[in-house]
Image (cartoon, rainbow, N blue to C red):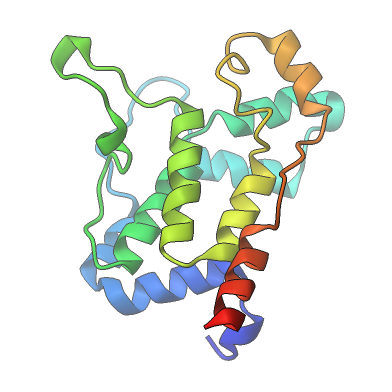
Length: 179
């Protein structure tokens, strides 16, 4: 990275993971996750990249909902944070959020993954990344019923989410000014 001050939060995360990770960083890039061979399977990040190149604007709310429900981008970000902090790549980076075991296991919801990722980004001092995640996944859309009730999701997707208090970046700058 030529000028780290001009790099985006995502670029900074990739760079730190690259420097810290070694082979673990390569695992994140390749996203080792087992064989996905069911009919119609297409990698989530390839789907996302295709949509970003040519968005289907016929139903933006449904498109946003579809993108919102994909766990691939969240898994990638969590694994980058793991590797940037000297931890290992994990096929299921949010497995620590699982409740129970065996057939009684309750896997984390998208909302729980997003909230954990926000906290972990802040803990790792990636304030701008936390801001971008919060903006990309507004808190009202993270409501537990958003996935189960499309009409409610559509209504909430049209509203903005007011986050009270300073942004994560503003909190960080006030902490560094005080110190």
